Image (cartoon, rainbow over all chains, first blue to last red; front, side, top):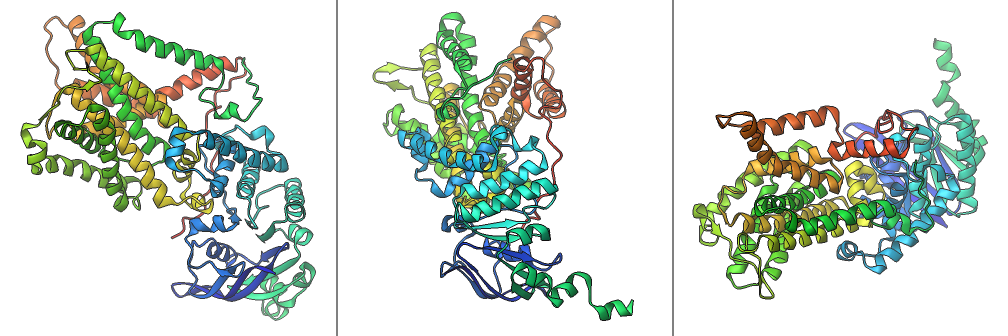
Length: 259
Length: 361
C-alpha cells in the first residue's frame, strides 16, 4: 500500500517553477531518497508535505487522504514527522525538553488540568518520559539528556533533531539531509539508525541527501530531481548510472566538447 | 561538589531538584510568614507592595520570558483587573469571588488583544501593545459611568469570612493574604512550566517553524500564553487597587508597563525568581534612595528623576554585563561552588550558532 502519494504536484515562486508536475509514491516500510543538485526542489517538496507551502496544482495524499486541507500543525498528528536541514531546535531548553515537545501529538490533558497538575497529568508525563527514554536509548543520547542545546556541538544537535522527530512516534519520517556536516563515522551511525528505524521501528523514511554512500547503503528506491523535474526513479545503482542523472551532475559529452 | 542521583522520572518533575533547595525555600517561606512579627508596619507595607509587583512580574514573565512575546502595555491589564474587581465588589460580590473574576476578565481582555496581535512579532508586537496601553488610559476616562473617570475609584474593604483585611486596619492580615495568593500563583506557574503547555510555550519562543512541525498550534498557544499572562497581571492589578486604596486613569500608565518590563529583565528573563528579584529592586529602590539621601546630604534636597536615572543605569549594566539578569548571576555563582574546582568561565556561554532555516512564508 502507498503511504504517501504526490500527484502531479507543481509549485511556482512567481515565474520560477520550483517543482514541475512531480508524481511519485512512497510505499509502506521503504526508505525512499530524493537526490539532485542544489535548487532541484527537494526541500521544497518536503515543505509542501509539511504544509509550509501550498502547491499550485496537484494533490498530496497520505494513507489515501488528501492533506492539502490540513494546517501545518496538524501534519504531525497524522503521523508525519520531519527534521530540518539547518537544525531548528529549541535552543534555550534541554535535550530532554526538546524531545518531550515531540510528544505534543500524544497530549491528552487540557490547560486547566495542567495548571493544577492533576495526577492524570503526572501519569501522562511518565508515559511521555518513557517514550522519550526509548528514543534516547536508541540514539545513545544519555550523556546529553540534561544539557542545553545552546551548548551542544553540531553533530549532537543533528542527532537530537532526529530524536525529536522520532519522539512524535510517526508512521512517515522525513529526513532533510540527515548527514550534512557530519564526519564519516557519524554518517555511518546515521546509516545504521535509518536501517533500524525501517526494520525495528517499522517507520517509512523519505530522505533528502547529498551523500551518495549513505543513499546507496540505506535506500530501497531513489528519485533523482533536477530543476523541479523528475529525471528517473529506481534502485540506487539504476539511478546513479542513468544518463540524465550523470548529465545533471557533471554535464554531458556534447557540453564538454564545447568547452 | 554535589552530584544528584535521579532514581525515578519524578526526580525531573518535582518542584525542587533535591532536599537542599527545598529546605531553603521552606526557610524563606517561614521567614515570610513570620515577617509581620519582625518588622514595623511601614516596612511590612513595602513588602506587601513587593509581592504585588512580583505577581505582575510573573504575569509578564510568562509572556516575555517563557513564550517569547513582547508587551509594553501590561499596565492596561492591571487596570482591567483593578477596575473589574472593585466594580464587582460594589455589586456586592465578596472579595474571594471578585478577585478570581477580575483575573478572568483581564484574561478575557488579553484574548481580545491577542487575537489580532498574535501574528505580529518582536518590535511590531511591542508597538501594538504600547497602543493598547495608551488606549486603556483614555478608555477609562470614556467609560466614566463605570470607572469613575478622572475622579477614580475607591477600593472597598476586603472581608473574607468575617475577617477584615484593610490596608491600614489590618496590615499584617493583608500581607498574609497577598503572600498566600502569591504562593498559589507560583505553584500554578511551576505546574505550567513542567507540563506540555509550558513546553509548547518554550517551543514557540525558540522556533515557531519547528514548533509547527512538532504539532504545536502557534496561534492557539500564543493566545493561551497571552490570556494566562494577562490573568495573572489582572490579579496583581486588583491587589494594587486595594493596596493604593484610590486609583484613577493615571495610576496604571505606560510608565508602569515599562517598569514591569525592566523589572523582569533585571531580575532575569525566564526565571520565576527573577520576577521577585526585579520586584524587590523596583519596590525598595525609592526607599534606599531617600534614606541614603538623608544620610549623605544634610540639606535633603530632592533631586528630580534620580529614581528613573538609577533604574536605567542598573538596566544598562545588567544588559551589558549579565544578560541572564541578577538571578542568572546567582546561578553562575552557585554552580561555581557546586562544581568547585571544575567551573569554567565560558560554561554558560552559547555555542556558536549555525544558520537557521530560511523563514518560510
